[in-house]
Image 1: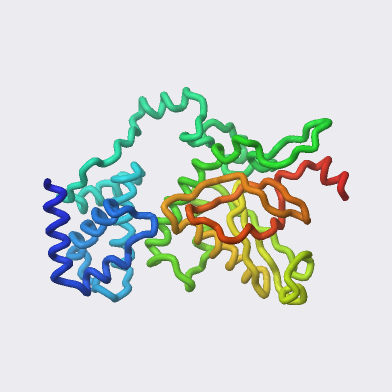
Image 2 (image 1 turned 90 degrees about the vertical axis):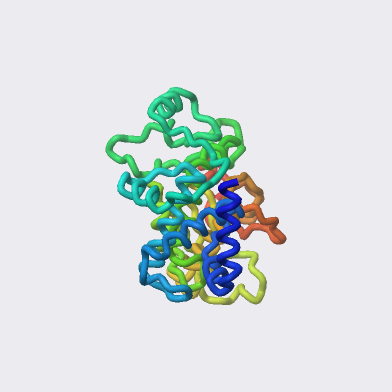
Length: 319
């Protein structure tokens, strides 16, 4: 009942201030449910007075900070994210008085984390916690892409292992939250952002790196006649061997920017999912690891520019 009264008070206030309602609703994230947005919207409205320079319709650093803190608070309440103690104290103070019913329970006690470490990795747990990395390179990727099928004598099968999507999913769940927070801080997804920098910084905050492959457009076979003679480059972006996006540009930086924009579009839904899908590579149908949203696809995937799961013996035999 307390939560209902709080929502009614906010709704009544916004009904009396339609311009304010339209302005604040522009900050709703693509991935937020009605319940999550209702709570975060109340957080923003309650704390506007603490940021005197925040004015509806006027961009400012104070507004960016308020929106960032609202996302941090929502991530903590609904997703169980934790932050430095000073930040936790700040959002706890700012969120005082906001009633949210049926909040998910997130077990993060020392005993729970210890017990989790003793169990075998499952699809719902972070596979990185069960991977031993070299001490001299804790943040470097293994030279062999994760999920890659190893060479098997007498076998011609190539492609990602069946368990690869489950192994990669925890990382991309973390990346999804990092991208969501970054885009909110930037004022939302749009054409004027530095898409590559946003994607790169989010991936590196999750202790991984992006892989970009560039191919001159004139070297790609099978293109429509309208594109076959055009100058330019095509860029393919992957992370942990998972395909994220392809883009075309007049030069490599432009192609990389477009590929990054396409990759960030996937993060606009309610979740991202790693799946094994069929696509073309060098004129052949192959299975590839793809990062997808929930939207149905009316067209097929663009041809792969790289294939990190290729069996070396098979590749040598076909050359």
